[in-house]
Every structure is written in structure tokens, then in C-alpha cells.
Length: 228
Image (tube, rainbow, N blue to C red; front, top):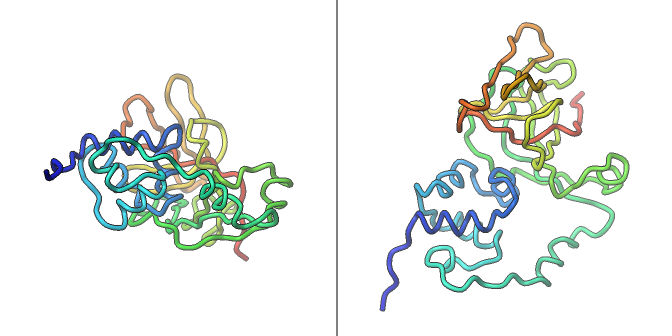
């Protein structure tokens, strides 16, 4: 007997269960899945094929058949997970550099959010000296001049993708289909202001109650590498 065709709605529920407490953006960039595609999957608007479907199954330690048709959920292999976590040993960590240009200005249109390469850095530098969790860090490249002189074009910034709630500090956010880096200021009520360091750029005020999907916090900037 042939199985029924897969349902995009039940697929969305199973993928959401794989995310758990993780943000969709963190899950997407960590596993090389375009974020816009993952959003459409979670909204029940599409069924992925080929490599994207396999990437989601591998990330969630399930089978493609379970993603498409459900049934008994496969048990993750604890030994495989342990090997993955330990593959670089104790001395170094790998931070994914995401193929995004983060606009310090009006932003750059998002084309892809796949991993372009990994930055191998001493664990001591990340975890011990700065107290950061390497597993929640992603790196992106700054473009534009609105955050100069603190961040200049070509600088690499590291964001903690677990810090996605409004707060005081420098954040990377999505405005419609553009990504920008700004200093966030929490206002009275449920509003925030996004400020630039360069005074030629006007502040942007966001009403969190009405912004909907047009605004999203991708992470808080916690460190940077300066391009000289």
C-alpha cells in the first residue's frame, strides 16, 4: 500500500518539534539551511526536497521518511552526537561565518544565509577570556558606514543567536528583507529604537506590537574582528 502524499502542515509540526527551544534562525544557519526556506516550511507553505530535506533530517537526528510521513520518531544516536561535539578537541572551536552582508546603513537584501566557511579560533580566546558559548555564536561581515568608527566595512562581528529578546546593546536585526547592525534602545511600552553611530543616519523606531514578521532580532553582537 502506497503512503499518502506528505502534508506540509504536519511536516511543519514535526520540524517545529525538532527546533525545541532553539530559534528558527539559529537552527537554519547552524545546519546550512536557508532561513527563508525554513520559515516557509514552519508556516506550512512548502515541502523541501533533496539536500534541504536531508539537512533537516540530519540536524534533527531523524529520518527523511519520519519528516514526511510521521510514525514512530527515531531515537538519536548519543555516540554520534558526542563525536560531533568533540571532533575539534579541547584547543579550538569552529564558528560558522554566514554568507550575509550585514548593512551598517539601510541594510542589504538577503540572498542566502548559508555557511560560507568556518573560522577556527582558540577555545581559550572565546570561552575562557570572553566567557562566550561557542555553540551559540555565528559570524557575519559588516558592510556600510552607519556604525563607523566602531564597526567598519569588512569587519567581522560575532553574534550570540540565543539572545533574541529586545535589550540594550548592539544587535543584528532583520527589517523586512534586509539585515542591519544597530545599537538598540528599549523605549517605554513595547517599542525600541535602532540607532546608528554615524549621525547622518536617522534612528529607526519599531513598534514591537505591530511589526509582525517584518522585524526580527537575529542576535546580540558580543565580539568583533577589525579589518585594517
